[in-house]
Amino acid sequence: MNTVRLTVGQAVIRFLVNQYTERDGVEQRLIAGAFGIFGHGNVAGIGQALLQNDLDPTPDGDRMRYIMPRNEQGMVHAAAAYAKTTNRLSTWMCTSSIGPGSLNMVTGAALATTNRLPVLLFPSDQFATRYPDPVLQQVEDPVSPMTAATDCFRPVARFFDRIERPEQLIPSLLAGLRVLTDPVDTGAVVIALPQDVQAESFDFPEEFFARRVWHVRRPPAESAAIQRAAEIIKAAKKPLVVSGGGTIYAEASEQLRAFATATGIPVSDTQAGKGAINHDHECAVGGVGSTGAASANALADEADVVIGIGTRYSDFTTASHTQFKNPDVKFVNINVAAFDASKHSAEMVVADARDGLEQLTAALAGYRVDEAYSARIKELKVEWEQATHECYHRDQKPLPAQTEVFGALNELMGPNDVMINAAGSMPGDLQCLWQASTPEQYHVEYAFSCMGYEIPAAMGVKLARPAAEVVAIVGDGTYQMLPMELATVVQEKLKVIYVLLQNYGFASIGALSESHGSQRFGTRYRTGDTPHNADGDLLPVDIAGNAESWGLKVLRANGMEEFRAAYAEAVAGDVPVMIHIETNLYGPNPPGTSWWDVPISEVSRISSTQEARTWYEGKKADQRHYLK
Image (cartoon, rainbow, N blue to C red; front, side, top):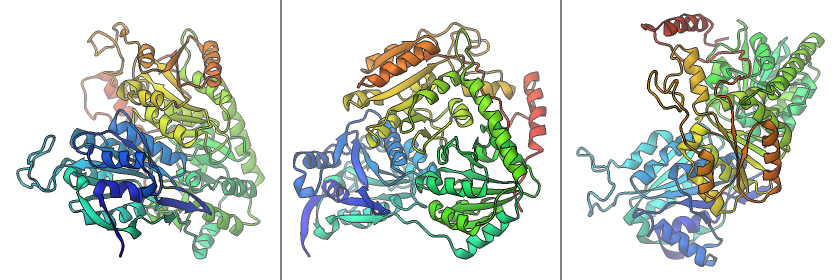
């Protein structure tokens, strides 16, 4: 057996540059590049290996692109966004130093795993030999010296290992990449590397570094499961599709449109599934659930059969188990994961969304919803389109509602451009209103709904889609949590457009607090303290000026006419831009048609809380498990 002597760090890079994915005959690099922030844990290990690869990539088979980010959480968000944009067929690796550097990646790992997005993380670790014990930044456990800070990754990773001998790297990398490329098991793969082991050498077999193609499977549906599902749907009078992210990741939009066209069954969407069917399709009825459109929610309330395709049924999708009100409602779920396919006592079709839709459409040949239901769908769709237009064109003075900004972007952005968002009130408004024409256009992270995602995510999306206009909508609260990757965007000359909505507070939690009897406590950026920051002056914080200090071109828009002009200027340029616009903290937001379970104190001396509790108990009465 031929061997090559490499350090563990060098072996990691040489292995990864030769890993590819394949689906439907198309191959691409599995690990497109490396994000890395270096410290004493990895600067002389993985860092040295990346340098060596950069200076002389030929022995390693190919070059691993390296980008220096500014924040460990941010770089994992960028990798996750890249993976989402490539439909989970490619991602980036992330390397960090030990201690705080490693733990900064835990939030990013949780986001990736919750969203079922593949990211590959190499947090550095304490010495395997334990000679320098405790090493700088080591967390000491008097009960077990085996405990390390990296153990915090275990509950948020889909795969976790710690390499304490060089030869352990071989089975660990192979097992980790199996998880990365598995459509069911994918998420954060975390391989902790003690800093001494990173620099230790070993005679690795050359076969380990051969070009390897990981074939991403499309599990077919069992014909018996399809037939059972078809019989349930054929008996339905008011069926409804709930399309989730799995439809997009499976690239099944064409099949979803064909299914809807053939059957007339209306299609609603989740945050992850928006755009799987074009908004102007006759059967597209918009977002469903807590932040859904009135059109989709009315149909959901009446549905006798719900057909879930690639959805995990989050609490927002089901409105905390109150959305599907028909007492006899049944569920049919097509999902690559049996775990999700089985939810709500469903008839399970465990399959790739594309294959499952093709087979189900064939099995339903001749079935179509009746004309009265089609007329109901059309009526609700027209009504909601009018409501959306009104939200988009309020012409509110002196400060526009944020829905007006969304409307302008929805009208100005092209079908192949990408809109990014993640947290606060904005995802709710966007799911409710945004009219997506393609699966690529709508990029909202809502499984973890992580404030701080948007800025680094735009970097990841732009790396994956360099020809698209990438627009990240950022609230002032989100901006203050994680702005650091603006410097990386400038450094890498990535033309990204950031839209900063300045409303001097947390709009989402403020509205939630008010509606739940807590009077917007602690949700406004103000001076003063009674109640907390309620009536004080605005803070003299200049976010636009801060963005300029990171190196961005900043355009300050006063009102919607200036915003539209600023967007045109940003598109015409070739540098990263931030468009800063002030919006009204108090909305108004789109009309709500559903509910979300956020518990309210059972007892209180505050009358607003008492009133909210009474309201809450009334809403709870509609909550139930779906057991048909």
